[in-house]
Length: 119
Image (cartoon, rainbow, N blue to C red; front, side):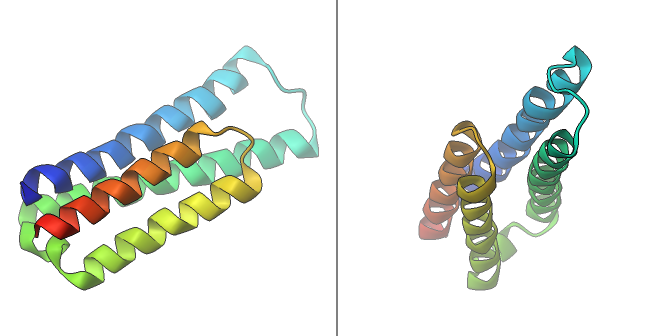
């Protein structure tokens, strides 16, 4: 069960980060929904950093899971994952205007806790 939860949690993080980038950055840029301004640059920059940070963390964790799955059940990896989730939650509440990224980060945190409990 631990193996499944690890793959689900980091797969979810990768998928939600990818979808966040596609929906909030790429689609709005391609459709021209925001007029060029410093606020638009800030919006695209914050959302890009948020989404691609999730994708990078998720992909790296999936690579670690593929090679050394028991490592992700130990407390340093769990603490790092929960710290990242809390950082994304705080960042989401402070800077992002949509609630979906917050929910995705919350689901990731719950999945990491469940995976750690099953280790």
